[in-house]
Length: 475
Image (cartoon, rainbow, N blue to C red; front, side, top):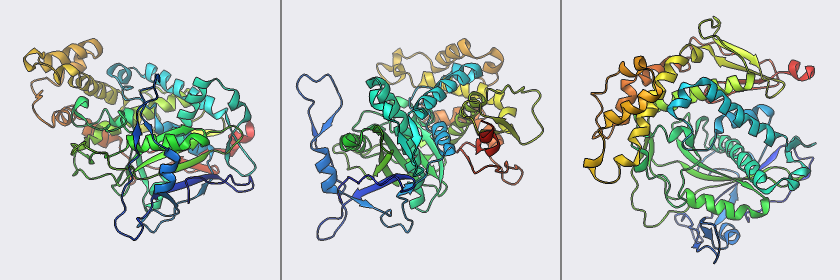
């Protein structure tokens, strides 16, 4: 079947999800992962983006639509109703999409961090204003989108592409008989890599880091790249995404053994005026050539966990405008509030997050300051003898952003740039693993909120989102 699907009648419920994998070779044998052929940019073109020869023909000749993940028993859902809770959850987990968002000053300043979260939610409100529900309970683009200015339309497509990757990831992982555990956007996982960022070879052909690393309850890793735009141009965007995903390195937490990603999926979200959103997922990319063997990417789990906690706290404040006194927290396990940004939603955050917020901010900021210096090109280029002592450089950064009391409690005699696990040692020295354990979910003694409405779910970082009919009726 070609990489094109017909538009269903509006009576069909839910949005359409299509999945494609390489066609089996004629006559049998091992499946060969197809490689798109790149071409030079057109003469006079100002774009540095790589282009690929006949992307529609390449996809139609090499990929076939499937209803199951090859070799797996589970069925891939071809239609899914997307609820308001689904949209908000996806938006909160997809992040900003930039690698350098988290800085020491942002981690330390809850007001600035909440302001950034509000800005990102404004983007979601803008995107939500472009999408409606049709009589088939599917998300459809409103007619006015065709009149939106080009750069704004690009921004809308970018956000919808990220949301689409999240929706598709949950269904794709379910097709593997698994459940999504965490969807780490690049702003989180790039700060948690074990080695210095300049040494991480995680951007083979496309020159960029993948948008998302997905970890499942079953311990698998999947890599997702998101694309958005018109349905007619989806082939070129999908091929571009597949090229960016080519030949990924092995992945693991620092406590595990690196293993290949289970899948590398490019998801395209079609955003045409007056049309339903369509989601197309293609796996896997072809093997990149002449890259050699890439070093594994190992992630420090405690850093990921605590950055997600801070992100959740900031999002809760942005969504509810609630003022919580850290010295007068409720005795209950959860703090609940109505959403001021999205009417009809109730949000609950674990009280334990707010109990430990101060310590998390101080210690994560210290780690990010160390990382900022350690990632500096001065340590990985030029003459070694010209590098400043790392402990001096770190103390200079810390002195400008972190109080002397927080700064001096750790000492810096343990800073050893020669150790391959230096950043993991920093994490342990700062007690990030202990803090992460204190805020981790413990099903034996944490009572989760009871769903009151029609739709409710948790984000990967334990923010509880519920659609409350009482609040909806009040509107």
